[in-house]
Length: 230
Image 1 (tube, rainbow, N blue to C red):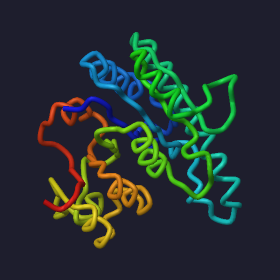
Image 2 (image 1 turned 90 degrees about the vertical axis):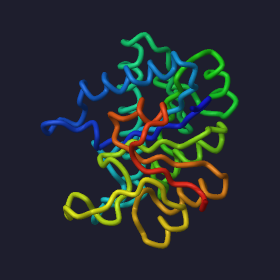
Image 3 (image 1 turned 60 degrees about the vertical axis):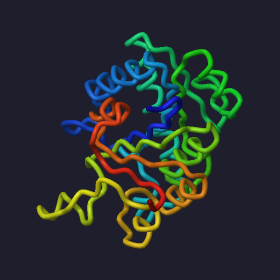
């Protein structure tokens, strides 16, 4: 279905049995990404850092410093995913808007597009490079910059519900919903900045469970599609 996509992977998905990095989850995700790449889909990835550090859960700590720590957490996850991809034989590159050239490449749109042309998966680390912006916003920004056909949000839940499915057994899953309705009903599918940017740029958002990446790419009925009103 897609020529180029941006996948946002939630850091929390990588937690298992109290360990912040689950190798099995990384390996399974890498296999799916390799399969998609072999089909000809160009893939950019933004990975969160919530398995290690989230700035918005700062409590009494300085928010800017904790956001900086969160950006470093995404770099750790990005390098782990790169290793998992390359063990599967899928070439990849990690790019960061924050200079750390001993570990990853400097980010620019031109460099990312050149990597796609070489058949590489591009992993975008360190969010936007600025505090106070979530990795969902970073994913929306990178999706717009690289001209992605869609933003795919791999979450710990399998879509957007009318209320928290972890707390309410009668929660209803939306198959399709508009940007405006997500905003007006405060459904927390993604943050306000991210969804507003996608609305302005006409980028469809698909929210789904991580193990359904191939189903989403194949156009199968899974997760929730967020788009303009029909």
